[in-house]
Length: 176
Image 1 (spheres, rainbow, N blue to C red):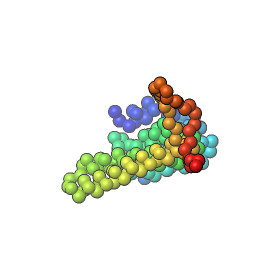
Image 2 (image 1 turned 180 degrees about the vertical axis):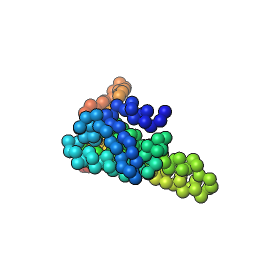
Image 3 (image 1 turned 90 degrees about the vertical axis):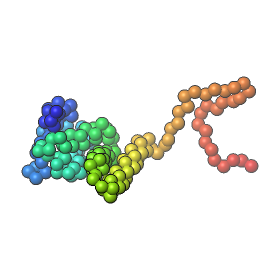
Image 4 (image 1 turned 60 degrees about the vertical axis):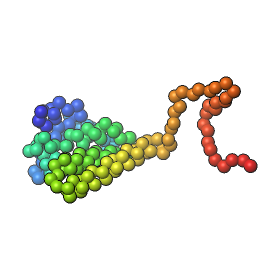
């Protein structure tokens, strides 16, 4: 299936065409479509983040001429799936989508390497990108829940003579 056929079935409310040299063409089904996708009320933010998505792609990843390699719709869809809630999350979502595309690109280069030196270089790059993506996910998680880590105990078994504590338990300096 070509990129054009995928675009026609998009549920995102956008269609993309063009290339970096001649310009990108963006068609929206509603005026606020980009703002909705990026979770903002500002046209300037939505347009800027969309441009950042395109800038992060290689020319052949943002062109109708290379439909099998076109990552434009993926970038926007990935950000939409993250559902950014504020400015920090919007920018992090764009970075995460760009990092993911770069990670997959690096994996392709690694798979097509023809000598050991290339394999080592691409493996190093791939591993750095994978770690970066994991750190970005952790940063998003921490930002969303204020840095607090929540642990939920699903099952507690107290034997005869034992005691269970229900509630918040904080550890700190003990009494003497």
